[in-house]
Amino acid sequence: MPVNSRIPGLKDSSAQQRRTVVAERTGLSDLDVAVFDPERGLGVEQADHMIENVVGVMGIPVGVATNFTVNGRDYLVPMATEEPSVVAAASNAARMARVHGGFHTSSTDPVMQAQIQILDCPDPEASRLRVLEARTEILELANAQDPMLVRFGGGARDLTVRLVPTRTGVHVVVHIHVDVRDAMGANAVNTMAEAIAPRLAEISGGRTLLRILTNKADLRITRARAVFDKDLLGGDEVVDNIVHASALAESDPYRAATHNKGIMNGITAAVLATGNDTRAVEAGCHSHAIAADGRYTALSHFEKTADGHLSGTLEVPMAVGLVGGATKVHPVAQAAVKMLGVSTASELADVIVAVGLAQNLGACRALAAEGIQRGHMSLHARTIAASAGATSDELDVVVKRLIDDQRIRVEHAEKVLADLRSGH
Image (cartoon, rainbow, N blue to C red; front, side, top):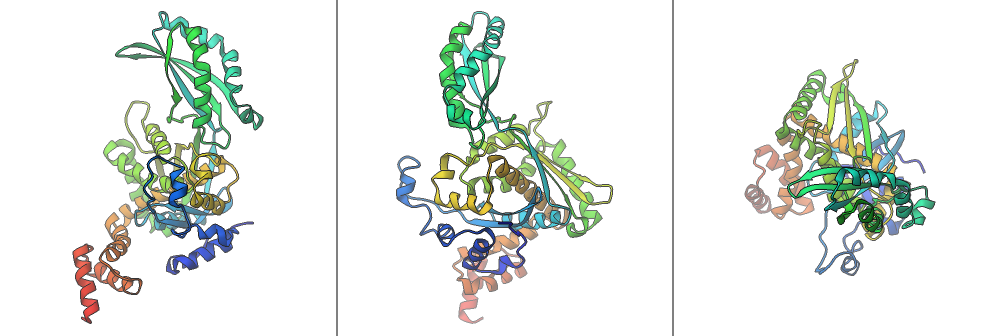
């Protein structure tokens, strides 16, 4: 059913009330939303089947970002993060983009690559050509490993060969390009790499060593763009300041690292909530931030439109899937995917990259308009108050006092709490 992601006042509701609203909006059942309760989510028995030497599970808050319209469709986006302000900033930025049609995305096919490293080739240049001559044979051998993937329209599409000079000599590195459809793809490409390695050794006259995917997923790109309303942002000066901040991130790697961290605050939270591999996605995105001249730079760009609004764009590799891995094992991840209502890995990537752009804009606006501390620390005050032992009835009073006193520290929260309880 169509989802309306605009839910004013959601932040003022209780967690249980939010679950009810989200369930009504997305069609989740009582059993679906029940897994968001820690007592009903991932248990130790399930966790014991996921990794080794399990002793327990660690909870991460799961919030819901609102206001997202992506390619004309509304989404409520689950985000798993421990950092205050991330969910709120993404939701607020999505609201500012909503009045101009929300986010628009495009993407390449879901192609992942595996590398096969070949050593000790007596004639590396000729080896490269011999491998390329055997392209059809190699691709057929690779596709024989996964007929189901081929049946669903995926499979090995191409191969390339690179000669890589290293301190131990010239290595011949074969890349096999595989359309992995709705999977993240690691298992599929690794299986193919293992299968074709012996034949590549024969053809090249060398010996194979590494046979594994690369997380530099530069053939699996998702792009997002949006226009953020200048009046909702705070006016012309804020727009200009964000453009200046973006320009610095494009030119200075010290700023770019924090700028891109803001993007990943959104992307990683959505990737984690849906049970995908956060480390793989982060590695792909940060490697994509290396410019042609070898300089680390911003992944996103902000520009002023002809009518004075703010245009934002983001282009990153996005290796996420809907089949396999924790997405099919973790009960909370399953409920999160169902909440999103996405039907393909490409659609999931579209939403995740839109969240990354929204979160980046939220951070840039805070820096350009009021400074990061004011907005961030206001939300952080709730964490501090809770750390000091404030109950739900005491929380709002303690938070207000911390903000008014401009002393958002645990020791001050403890004093405020003691005063409150003593009647002062």
